[in-house]
Length: 319
Image: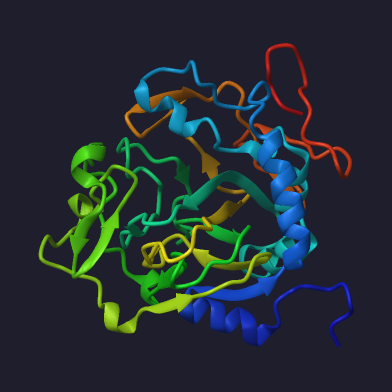
């Protein structure tokens, strides 16, 4: 029998996850709680003095990277990525030893286009160089994404869409180049829906240029504020446009997890996305469960509840 504070997936739920590629929504916070916490956190995030990536890093697009991985310097986000309601469920899929390797925000403002259909196995889709590498022969690929609604996410405000069971076949080649051009790639009408991909055209990566996602099989995942869904990054996913009938924005916060056997940013000294570059010298992954017996990655330690991660030394490494 499941205990009151045991949030692990049941055997049936694990089987359903492996079949569909996603699970949820699950409740993490009550709507009033996340509204208060997020309002306070929004103000705190304006201080980027402890952020891993800096505005002064290289390229015009570097500022778009400045709010990646804010769990490393913000107390609420540090606690969020290690919440048992999240981590217990992750270990049923990834095993007992788990890293959080990235987090980022997904705001959608009134009138914004939807996000185009996409998959990610190596996250090399912007610079052509893999950002994650599973061990050879393991059969693993992609990352387990936990997408939490910090505000209500409905079809009207641009909730997520999934095509169930689509994670078994990759329709995109992440070794192909993708050109960053916000003027050209924002709000393009695709199959009758305004879609974009943050200044890229994800169709440039298609293995078969004539292929189109079967949107007749798509499901919309509506969530109230404080709920989350977990899914493989290799699952075909997208989002609806924000219809603009309400002035409220939709805010999603995404944390990405892999087992400790996965190498992060292998051979890379910087992140290259959105036409900019940001150095990785302050970056570290977070061990959220179990132990790391591989030593592939620099690891950050979550010290005490209510505090973000601390620096190990004056060089800016995290401990």
